Length: 388
Image 1: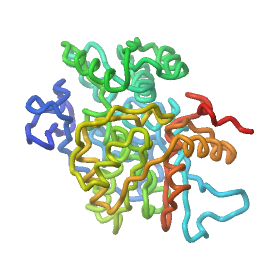
Image 2: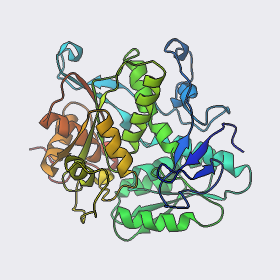
Image 3: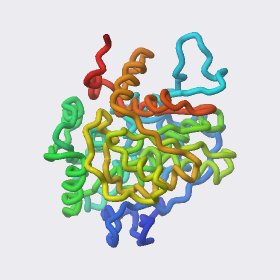
Image 4: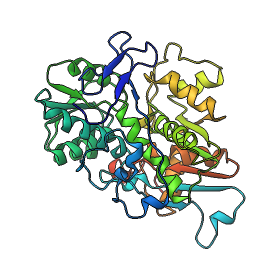
């Protein structure tokens, strides 16, 4: 049994399941779980002497009561101004800062959620019911789960779509995980993984269906709150495919506000590639759900090319609840943003530059923070983006 008293709940059907079960989705509607978990307040002063990883926010994490945890020292990534040398970003009326989550142990923000999933899997293996961990990914989430499974000594298999970056495949293999390459796109891969997830003894480390992943990604906002001295930016500009970073951010903002640690919540500004933008279309049409998804077009932002995200309703609601909006970026804007960041000393993969591309095209008032989510070394420079 888990030490923490948590339970899964379906946000649509209100069906419950214990959080130590291997039931990876709601048995009634087959939708993703939420987690019934009440965080406790924390103080800035208490953080000064704590562990240098996301486990420092133990009051806010559902698996924090048992020590030691699986960890690779994830979290606490730098927050830097996106300005030219010699200027003062904080003195400007409207400021953009970047959080360098591509400096995580596996070079992407997915480590924030993967460490939570693998910690949960590690605890469940002690009962003998789990024999392997399974993940599906366009690359970064699979790499993160593979790395943390290696750290925890767990057997891991990762499903990826045909066409995944060779560097990401190499990284997954290097961590000792077994790869299953699925013909087709990201949706085909997800379907294949979900079919395998029902096999006995399988823990499905889904960054979409398992809410522990969201409770890991919410540490992105807890870090901002700590780094900014107990406040939050005016806007959080976040890339959205399956929405795991945005939904984690919404969780953290709600918790900090509920505990009286912030007065207001930032606007959530969601960014999609124009080529695959079902949520942006639904948002601007005033819809609460997605209509039948259109066939996705190729995009450089492969990590957010999700035509039918299972948590679409929650994503749309979270953006509206904060007075935020959706923005889309073109392939040319992605190429230009990647080069621009590289010339500022920041080499980021093409998916990870989408937010900077959006902010360059449509600046936000006040202080905005964008995440740089994945390292450029994982994919290289986007096709057509070579410097003159």
